Every structure is written in C-alpha cells, then in structure tokens.
Length: 347
Image (cartoon, rainbow, N blue to C red; front, side, top):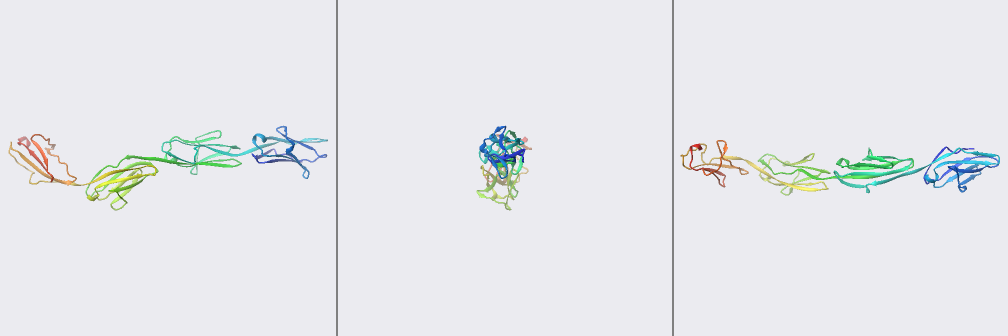
C-alpha cells in the first residue's frame, strides 16, 4: 500500500494525476473526495497490473481544483482511508504595464514621470525594478500595483527602466526607455568686445541644455576651427571663442550657432580692435600766453582706433561749455578750445 503525498503542486492548466497502490481481496472499491465532496467517477481509473488507483485532474485551476484530496477504499471485509493531500495550483506571472502606454517616452526637464505595473501570480512573484541594470526601489507598492514616480525629472533620470517579475512558474519583464531633454537656456549672451591691437579677445556664451549642445562659431559667415589664431573651448556650461593677437582684419561680426538636436538658436557679437590714443600738439601748447579780454585758442591733435573721445579739463575738472568756452573738432582729429575774452581766472 502507498499513500498520497501530503502536498502536491501543479501549474494552472497542467494535468495532474493522484496515484495510490492498494491490494486486497476481494479488490476494494475506491471513492475519491475533493474537500469532502465525492469526485465524479469519470475522472477515476484503476490499473490492474499495478493495482494502482488513479485520479486525473484535467486543466486544473485555483477556483475548481485547489484544495484537499483523499480516497476511501472499501470491500466486504472493511474499509481504509488515505491521508489527505493538499493540492496547490500555481499560476504563471501576469505582468501588466499600467503606465506609460509606450516603451519610449520623451520628457522635458521638470515634467513628471511614472512607471507603474500590476504583477500578479501564484505564488506571488518577486518584483524587481532596475535602471540601466542597477536596482532601484519602487516609490510605492500596494497589492499587485508597483509604482515608481519622479515628480520632476532631471537629466540623471534618463535611462532604461525594467521591471522583472518571477515566481516558481515563470518570469516576465517589461521596460520603458526614458529620454530626458532640456530646451536651450541662454543665461549669458554674447556681447560686443573691445580689445587693443595685439591683445587677445574672448567671446563667451553661457548655455544650459540637455543633451549638451554643439556650438559652431563663424566669423563673417565663415566657420571657425581651432587654430593658432582661434581657440574654441568649453568649461561646464560656458562656451568661449578666443581670438589671439587681435589685428584689424579680425574686426567684424562673430556668430555662434547652438544646437542640441532638440532646440537651436544663434547669437552674434562684434569684435572691435583699437589703438591707444595718441596726443600731439600742432604747435607748442604746453604753455600758452594771452592778453586779458582778448580771444585765444588751444589746440591738440588726437589719434587712435577707435576714434578717441576728447574731454577738456580745467585744473582737473571737466570744463563746462558756455558763452566763453567752446570746443570744436576737425576731421583730422584736432580738438580746439576757444576762449572768448580771456580772464585772469582762466589761468
């Protein structure tokens, strides 16, 4: 005589057979019970060669087949009962993606992100979330609902998120590829730059964006590359074009094109190359004499690139222009102060 096992497991939908070997004379009749309810005889059979009593369960499910089974044997001389066997029906993992509805999602920095799934099965599956292969924790787990959420995404949240659910029966997985972008944000624009002849001039722009933008520099619509004359560099979010040993041919309009594949813009600025102002007198003027109440003039010649701005001073203070003091400038750079009716106080 053999007994039923105390416990048995099968997968939902997979046939299972209980077997008990009993010998007796006369041969006993067997009656099978499921949760103390007799089992229909069409599922019962007997193997005479092995003296084996069998119960076949076809397409078992949790609702129709899970529970306790036993068998009672009877003949004219008496009866015997097997120990009960508890049958557990295992169900494959059922993994359902609730959100998002697509495998690829594009979000801008600051937007919310949620990846949620329902993971069901019997036994309850072990559910794991990874980002680019590294495990991360769910934000919340309630019943079969597993949620990972980010209120405001940042560039570091970009990646492939994968949920894996596994039990004894099966393993299922689903994933989402999150792509994060940030529109171009110019926090410091290009500005016109003034340098002296022979010095280096720098044009800089500060830009935040994700993915990191590509910067292309132009001078009078000719693209610039790194060379002995031009140095193109970036440090964090500051992008700079340096013009070495500025000369008059370097004067002009510089343009930068900014593009990160999501957004693009361009800005322009001018480079001015100047020469230090030079001062000379057309005639000796360091000391000048005049007669009181007579008109007189003082002249100086100024040169430079860009054209110098001339301010006349008297004893270290800007000289106001009025009826007695008048300043004129000629095209060749001579600035003349005319004094009407010179006074002793003008000394």
